[in-house]
Image 1 (cartoon, rainbow, N blue to C red):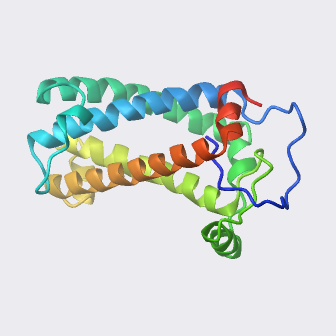
Image 2: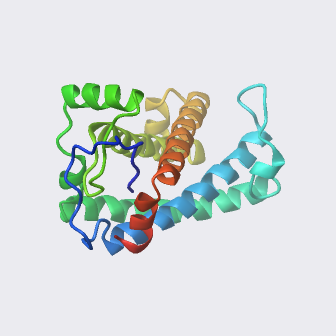
Length: 212
């Protein structure tokens, strides 16, 4: 997945070689499968949430998937298998091909602080789409970790007896629901930022569609 921030009028990075493949085919295919599955999981998850709200609000029916609790559960479980299988293959290929090492490493506190300061001032240059800045690295690693928490808490809610040790580790069934909700919220927040930034720099979206 590749997003970027607003570019500095005076680029300080070296642009990627013209015509070079910025996003391999397997990354693009899995990215869009993940996006579709994640959208289905979020909307169906909101339908499930509405059946037993944790807080004093409900999601609009226009933003839910499934129509009722049973329908929401069917969509949620179907999308879950797609997301878990595709996500697992993505992680395996990410390590096996060196994609993660190239894109997400190294991460340094000084680099994050410097790039975050530049981003706040809208001066963070990312003319070279083949590389992520430190802020992007932290966000992508963070969303991968949050994804693991979401899966773990989801399993604890789905099968609290079979996964009783996991459920207990998360503080019990009720606490696992809160963990799952906040993990979902973090993913939604990341996705919103991801979409906005990709829209601000169309060439990043183009790279995720055609690779260049």
